[in-house]
Image (cartoon, rainbow, N blue to C red; front, side, top):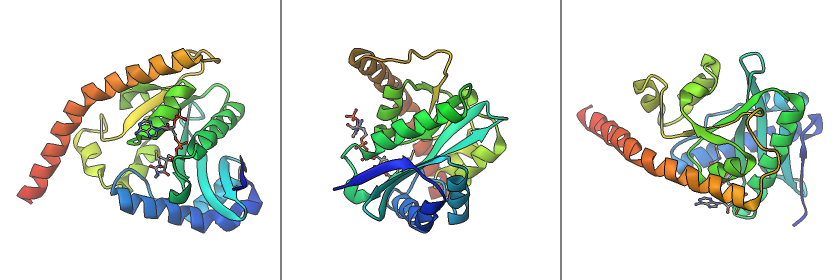
Length: 218
Ligand SMILES: CC(C)(COP(=O)(O)OP(=O)(O)OC[C@H]1O[C@@H](n2cnc3c(N)ncnc32)[C@H](O)[C@@H]1OP(=O)(O)O)[C@@H](O)C(=O)NCCC(=O)NCCS
């Protein structure tokens, strides 16, 4: 394996279709959690220097990009994807570390956030210094939340007036975070997050149950 992870530029636009296909295939398999993206949008992000791409020789195997909201007050690292053949080998962690550094360079004062159902992503975010938060602490920009419309669980987000969904919101506030976290700090933060998730599981179960009942009634 000779994997190169770097900031994408115009030369990488040839991979935009493959990236969207990876995202779409993954969304189909999981049946949840990934907003649909178009190749033209990914190409624009590459032109702006706001993407991290992982290549194995000439094949794209991983990707993530930056979006800013509310006049750069918030930044999201979105569209994280790793090719199924390369998962579990630390690629996502490396991509997220690089996009995190790039986000802080481009938007030094912004709060960085993400919403995800993935435990792997929560673990990486937690190690980077993100904390779980309610959706009310994230951007309220309607265009960000519009991205959820293509998710299979959008009805839940609507039903809760955008207060909660199956995704967990996580936020990194530059002013509150210690830059150098020790292994012990990371473990403590991860255990706190697991505790938070346990409490949320009961709430989520109720939401899913309601969703199932609604489907049965229709
Ligand atoms: C989610 C995804 C990006 C993870 O990619 P990956 O390259 O397999 O992830 P990594 O190998 O870098 O693992 C990341 C971390 O998660 C940890 N991890 C793995 N399984 C875990 C689990 N069940 N619970 C908690 N942490 C877990 C790993 O140990 C690693 O942390 P560590 O290095 O501190 O040990 C990949 O599975 C994917 O593309 N999925 C489909 C798209 C998707 O869900 N994108 C996320 C949208 S928010």
